[in-house]
Image (cartoon, rainbow over all chains, first blue to last red; front, side, top):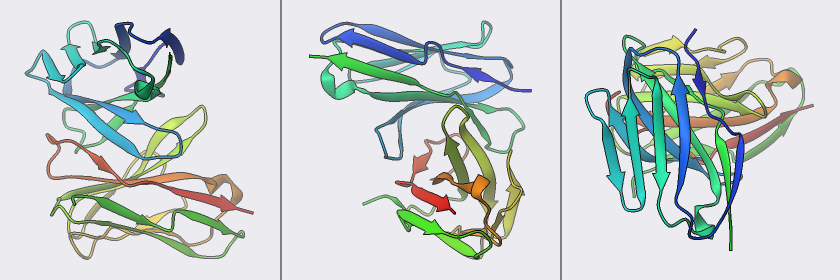
Length: 113
Length: 112
């Protein structure tokens, strides 16, 4: 069974801190990996998409990396701000899975002013 | 504006009363999918569609039906809702499996 794990479930940091959110997956035959942000009561917004042939993607203060051999992805957030407070989910698309995504349960981030 | 639109946003119903949650996207996407999100269980896929008239089961399809008669619309049908279908439902779409997935704002369903 393909599983995606995100630990810890919650994280609280002071404003300005650089932080890393982790995502691990059990099957290395992935097609791509996406990081999403979800605000309370809202839908998910795709932040970064990494194809299996790529090692990382960057958007503004966000950088996502992918290491298929170790089954890990990290989302790096530079100079965190209170507006970054949200739940961050990673989702893995597996080869041959017809676009099905397997989601982690998310990390709820709180950035304290 | 590119978007995925779900309706209704909130729905309270009673056991056994058929309901439909609509989903529409304006991006000409081929792929559409339904998810439910429950505390402690995360997001689980219900059904997905690779294109018009092509649908398939996800992880938790029991008690749900879908149809894809037009490219832009992908309604979720609960023929006889039960309390265990109380959940937050999301519709999503993408142009291709290699592309970003766009989500609707969600439908909070309560079945009494």
